[in-house]
Image 1: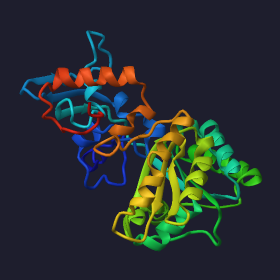
Image 2: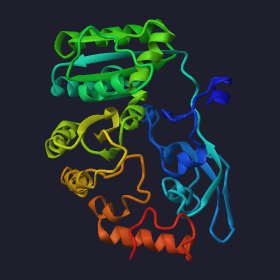
Image 3: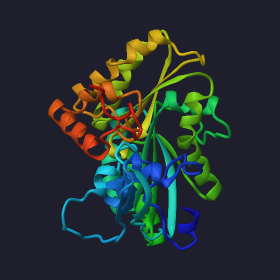
Length: 345
């Protein structure tokens, strides 16, 4: 991303792990991140790939054309396949021009309905300059303040729900005016407190609260982490169901990319020894709950070794069988990332 920034471009993908993750792995897992609400998924931003198959065959489609209707778009099979069909060795990615102006704010609400209404209003009023829209409940805020390093809470008191909004654009004062008009409207009906970043330091401090969630979740014990896609209206009902189920054995904290319906639901423990009783309570309960809400058991973190046996909660059996046929076609000996992604026979 530094290479692009020096040339006034940005990656369409932004992750808290951007300092350590690799582009090939991002594509192989179809990573989402905080800019998804603005630029969409890697399925739309990857223009071409070079992939090495299990038998050594090299598939090369690095022409970077935005329009190409000649045959099947095979590159899409490798995006999100977690290395089970081939190894991504090169990629052509569509990178937008870097916006000239950016600002963010942390808003507090007393009710989840108020937060939802603010999200809807942000998409309508801020439209093309809306760059990120992130949700945290107060349990998640407590987690990062107590467990993560270098966090600073910018408001005078605590509230049940928080919304982090970032806007980016190229229209200078006009973009700022739109942001302030939006905030003025929300302060009248939904928002009870908030802060708008005034400089780069405050901008980074606000983002650090959200980006410290991974550190906070795992710093003092094992966390059972669930990355799911559901209607944002169902975020808290799912969270409260899990909280009630696990309240005697762990602390439930929720946050996520509410702009695109991605909930990160975590049950925190105080031990680095896995609580097998808690695990049995959670799985497959969480996946069943998500399925009842017509959601996905993996929004952006993938299936890996732990979730293939639960794939049927998100995909019907005929579709799973077709996926197995695709795997057999590209990797008949099963040597690429074995035991991952698809349920075993």
